[in-house]
Image (tube, rainbow, N blue to C red):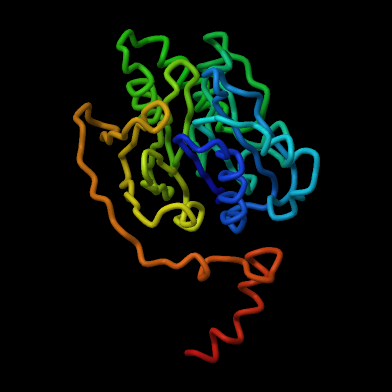
Length: 281
């Protein structure tokens, strides 16, 4: 189990938004964490990766100040990892980039046929830096992008790539070429948060609840494409080229009910609150 969060919109503190969101998702993975982003000039920045729990990340550290100092990044993705495919390391932490460096992907799930896909891509000249199945997804999307001439080729490439993945998966990807973010789901949870001219993508609502309580639940076999700089969102079926409609739901969750409070980690909070939970039963 891993945690995904993404942001698309006009905030100049988008990097800090993602760090906060990752800390809300730390219960989904303690091994390592990372971030990818589109710079103000439209190019992808170098990935930021760390081994260890995001909850231990010191906001007074030089790295935090460096991350928070990145302004006007309109598209950011983040990930907190519980290792499944590949050992715990910075190299295996997400996000993973395509060979051309223009696509960044974070994933929750397991690609059951990743060895087969990897061998096929290697035969086509693709190189791999990590031991993960996620890097296979990034390179598979790049390969499919090269086969499409349409101006919507990112959309078609993700659909084609996602259809080839066996297993339960959810992904969020950002594209240098178009500045878009695409989120796709098949088995693993993925939720869209809807704000004013901004959108969030996450494995769980608390990751963005501080900013909006309006959500759209992605169903299996669906994906969302969020336009450059939060310029709108569209939904499609993985097996169909037709656009689909999704309903915005207002959730009643309160921020304080999903906060760690005085505890350093959510797991510690859950353990310490068990007595009160049992008492209420």
